[in-house]
Amino acid sequence: MPELYFNPWDPQFRADPYPAYRTLVEGPPRLMTFAGPVALVARYADVEAVLRDHGRFTAVRPPSLPIARRGPFAGAATVLTSDPPVHTRLRRLISREFTPRRIHDLEPRIRAIMAALLDAIEQRGAAEFDLMAEVANALPVMVIAELLGVPSASYGTFKQWSDAVVAGAGRTQPWEEPPAEFLDAVAALRGYFAEQIEARRRAPGADLVSALVAAHDDAEALSSEELLAFVVLLLLAGNETTTNLIGNGMLALGRNPEQLEMLRREPARMAVAIEEIVRYDGPVQATARFATEAVNIDGTEIPVGAPAFVLIAAANRDPAKFPAPEKFDITRHPNEHLGFGIGIHFCLGAPLARLEGAIAIGAMLARFARLRLADPAAPTVYKGSFFLRGLSALQMKID
Image (cartoon, rainbow, N blue to C red; front, side, top):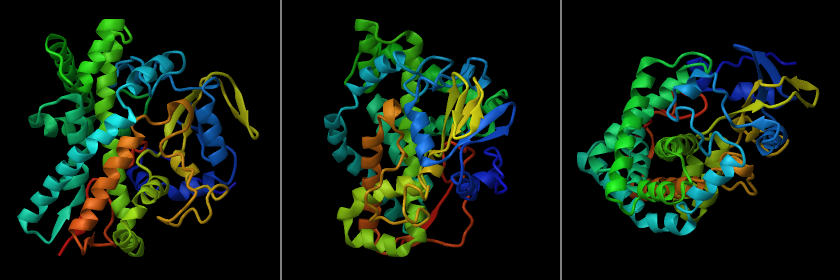
């Protein structure tokens, strides 16, 4: 077998895990040893099979993992970390609030927020701007915070908490105790939303938190712990992945200027371009599953209880599925990527992420006729998470 270096807690590895993925998709899952055996599942067919097989590969985190007990969900079930029938109940509840109509109704507000962010950049009169700080970090957290009914003054604080939770989880191996800054951010985030939940009980509004509180109080569809975990998940998942989609997408477009110019000339290609962005350098690199029994995948024996790192980003560049998988091609069709998952855990927020990404990228291309990377050769710096891949900064020129 080809040599392989795989260490998701190494910043240099996280900066470019794709060489390892190219090796991994050449064969069946590999077993590596960290605190115990861990299966690396990379081929498209294997990733799809594992994600669909919640009988043998559970999404439930073992309570023995410190990150599960002391993380933002405090061990409560969420749509991300549960299997049927719990998952079915939770997903049915939130699906009522994330309807296509509700997402469609958000479009004018998302466009208005994006226009205000670009106005602020123009008013500074600078020749360049940091896309992450001034657009990609700001837009998604503002949108999800408004959905949750959070006052505008809290946007910045929310982002700080979210960043600290993601970074702390990303730097810590799951079997290690989380760092203090992670625990502090978790406590602050949960404390804030516990207060918001109580406030909605006293005075309900038209926001998502009020809808979830009503579901809990009227039908006991959610336990108190599930309700709090649900709201925290919505904030974290609702902003971090879309932030990364916008940043990774603009980096790919900037490194492929002919694709950027095609998209500028033909904005009707935007929907297809968003799918290619998610496939090529997706905001979610991997997820975790745990074997409920001993499983053999093409000769690889995965022991009962062993975690499987399900490498979505590797599957999305599997040459057995995608022609010229290393090429960034905004005309690629069909594009059956796994960037939003598959099966019962397919991302509920995918329509909102697609909409925000399309609006953000489209608005920047329309506003700035010479938008480009400030320095195409500049090294990229990624935030401290392997599972959620996102840039710390990305300088763009607009002069």
